[in-house]
Length: 373
Image (cartoon, helix red, strand yellow):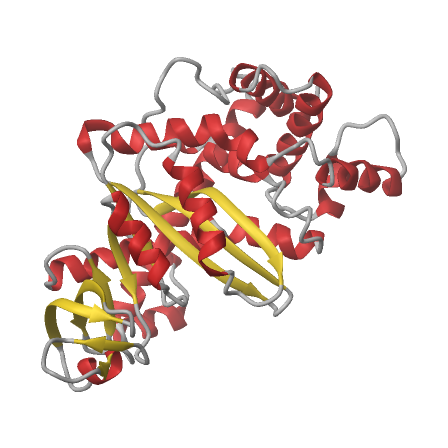
């Protein structure tokens, strides 16, 4: 049995345990797709077709098999991901920690709009729910509510949640939804939004941040509807624009910096967004649950990321040494991003080593146990 076949067998056992009602043919095909994707580490259908252990040697038939799988309406991403999402949320809530969710909208070449909701875990974020539509990046509160409700249904009872989001187009409905559920939030705002700070005049968020290094504005009214919230403003040296963060808690430097934990979402969602570009089919793109499944397989087995890991100087190219000397903060961020990305890569290397040495693979879905680092 080849590498893809061994991976597919373990994935198949996990899928049957997690989704006992899924049809056998669907389990077998999804398992093959996941195994091929882990082996090749790409969502490119042409490359995946090359390694699929199918009976035919014709490349066009291999790609046709994969395209039909992607278009299968019975393979729903929410249904496939639900067991893994519930386990990940339960693990995030372990010992009373706050569950951190990152909302990430993206415009892919003015063709597709992707809205993804990920779970913050260490220096990364694990995609839990997403939607893809043809058109501009802003999908509106309707799409946001669908994803938020989907993830909320899998939360453990009594879980505290914090939502992080970049400068998308916020809405009155989103703030009201978060307030009604009692969720924490850190939402970065643009500088052109109307706000009533209580000084007797309506100004813009940009005017409040102009010339300010750090500012706290509790109990303000946002938008023309007067949505109650708190604003924290922080403009650190070397950054071209200030952070204008709407939050539910007391605004200060620490709560403003809570927003920085959403940076992992861009690293987690790269594979899924690449799949959207590769398949070029907005109606097929939501059915890529096996990507998130394959991403979630290695990380319970690899241990925590090591953001403090240093790169030996002898392995650094000369231009990087120079850049580190001229801008140490920038180079430090690059090292953090690389070490966070290597968390997932170490999981893939673990699978590869076990396959090469013919050792048992870690369970794809550990039934009856909460996944731990």
